[in-house]
Length: 466
Image (cartoon, rainbow, N blue to C red):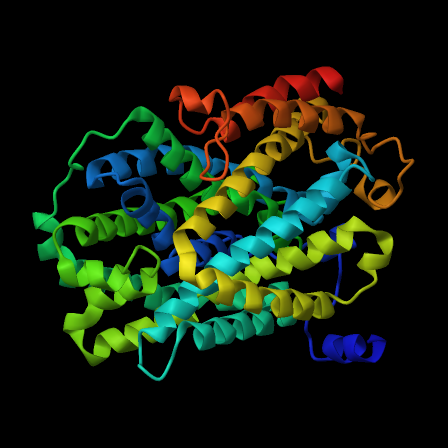
């Protein structure tokens, strides 16, 4: 493995693990990459599918879905954009930075959770990409599509962070062309679709859809620092924030809205779209049905849409690797490419099995993401703003000396984070609303308040315990 790693380094590929990037190497001034890496990661069919959940799974109308999308995206895009500032300012991967709030040993918990949840998110992403590719030809099926998307994501992850930035710089173009074409071709049918559902949506249903949608956006918070560790350490944190925020917002809002509009029309007024969507488990079939009038050009767009799925899968797989390496020192010595290979080997069979029940798989994974991310974000953000005084200085975060020293005074002990996690879980469980469990508070018709309650409780509990 050492010989392979050395050869990859000679080829110019990234071989660094989770060791923080020293200040002298954080010099990349191309801050616009923060926009493109997250614009490309969200301007695709995967984000569109999150918008379809409102009408297809919760039975919401177009206007109800659009109102929820606007409110949720405006607020939640700020979370991953804030976390993006840690990359260039500290040079640390997400879970390494989290040692300063969770403690050296306490961070094992979020690291393991992040590996499991992001692996689940990879399953969802590859299902959508594989289904879309399968619509191109009768000789393809979702299983083969899933394998192809998984291997493409592995190849990009194998090359490292810098290669990923170059890929993300251009890969958004075919996706945007496809979205515009879908709107041009299907616009007439959308005009005839009812704006409201047959029955008014209860507030609880709107809230539950909103929390599911919020989880898709906030989930990027554990990824964004990983892709800025080589950028200019002297760059303004606000500039990094706004580049990342706009990357998320400008891509997520249109994609979510298109997904909601097309799904609502498919469920009500356009039988061919409904047939493509099937029983609600084939987003690729819906996109293929919308693009069908364009003939061969539509087939080409389907191929491009599916083959650009790694724009979201590759960053996710990369962070699965870095999070796994943070769990234990011995794991940090395992080459990243080897962890990526194992991740892919696990991913493919799970995606093949889950493809037949996409929406239930999607919603369950989103719920788990939201529930654990609520206390995680509360802890890291409270630590930074309250106890580190919003500073990225050496006095606030002595990264070179503290990051791998469990006894260093600059690292939190972890007790406060564990107390906060327990308190948040105690609040989240009775507020949950899922197919497999509904808590006593949610049974009263409140909707799924778990994610919101976990964050709101987490902030004061951590501040007091710390």
